[in-house]
Image (cartoon, rainbow, N blue to C red):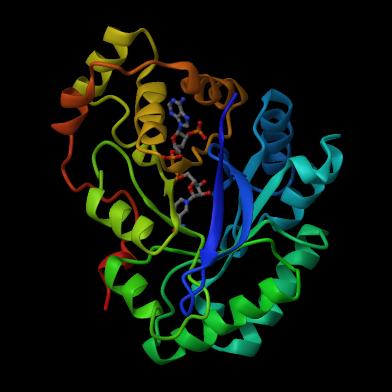
Length: 283
Ligand SMILES: NC(=O)c1ccc[n+]([C@@H]2O[C@H](COP(=O)([O-])OP(=O)(O)OC[C@H]3O[C@@H](n4cnc5c(N)ncnc54)[C@H](OP(=O)(O)O)[C@@H]3O)[C@@H](O)[C@H]2O)c1
């Protein structure tokens, strides 16, 4: 069984921790899971196997099926944790941030989500403050239990201190053995947020890395399980994606893998490998 972690928002003015809630540390990412049954089938299987956190986004075009799966799962809504994200192209103003949060709730068929993320730093730097004010308003309206960011570099997080009333609860960023990011992990924690690691398998690109295969053999698990558990053991929340029901179970079982003694073997795997995009490096 996976653990939960307390997330919350640090008040910029007082330093007080606000809106603290529990969040599962492990879940299913649903990017590239298509509507028409694939997305719903994967989520229903995952929930049935013990997953309690689902990570979607407007950009994934599957919020509707994600909501259907949540409702049909038979698990109480309060036991599930639903994350979605404000598309970068929609992150343009205070009003549009609020409108798109409402639209995502309508797509999901839910009266509130658990965590709403800015998918990446808004491209127009001048709109970043307004977009975050819109996120704070979504939280104030009770449409989401927490707000956060994704793909924010340390400089983006630092800049928020000048315009935020409350700081993000989460920063969702790419982290895996080939892109370990200890500095960004620390910068995220320094603002009171928890790192949420996406692409823990580097999108599957590195699953046959012989160093990973050797570690997996030495501890008696699969390569995917070793990579996921390494990410989990950094303290980050993580959300491996699979469309395959057997692999959904395999990934969940990674939580019982014991990687003690493999720390040095993982340390040398760092190669600053970005499997997707990297807005953290943008201005
Ligand atoms: N905020 C962002 O900008 C951002 C960016 C990327 C991802 N994300 C989130 O993070 C989630 C996960 O990241 P990701 O989808 O990029 O990549 P990932 O989870 O690192 O890897 C997914 C890939 O690995 C394969 N896979 C899964 N389990 C496996 C296993 N046990 N053995 C072998 N292969 C396996 C999957 O194929 P099958 O489906 O065929 O199993 C898929 O091709 C996304 O779904 C999304 O929710 C967020």
